Length: 165
Image 1 (cartoon, rainbow, N blue to C red):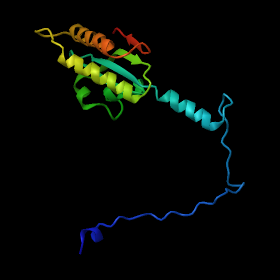
Image 2: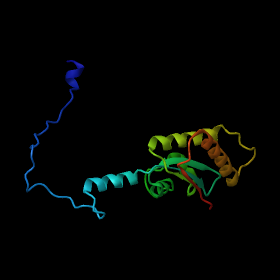
Image 3: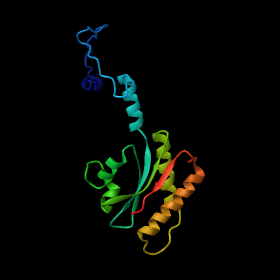
Image 4: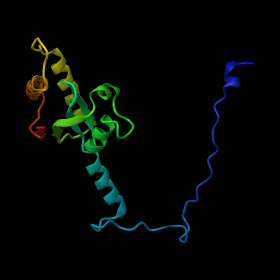
């Protein structure tokens, strides 16, 4: 018996779709509140929902920070804090986390991920001060790294907001 005969790919047969839908089976979707057709309203909503941002969160317990990318920051913060499933394993030790910086205005996921990667990489390569760093020192380190990222990438279209806690 050959291997291909044993593990044959199974295909689900496709049923033929009618060329024209019967008038009684077509259901009209209501237009959005703005008066746009449903497909345009869905496209607008999807475009708005996919606004990528890069965030920096700081631990309330230990002098640690975490940089990440998301389209829904409030949901992502709840995940990091363990309120919802799906938080990063690296952030489980510093709960609870608070927002330190939010960078918005990325064109797409690729641009946001590149920014996040540069920020993390520069932070990692920069020299740190010796001794037991407090949260202020850690945040200053990330802020200096962010200023270096801005010198490498065009950030003129980005909104960078630092939050004090």
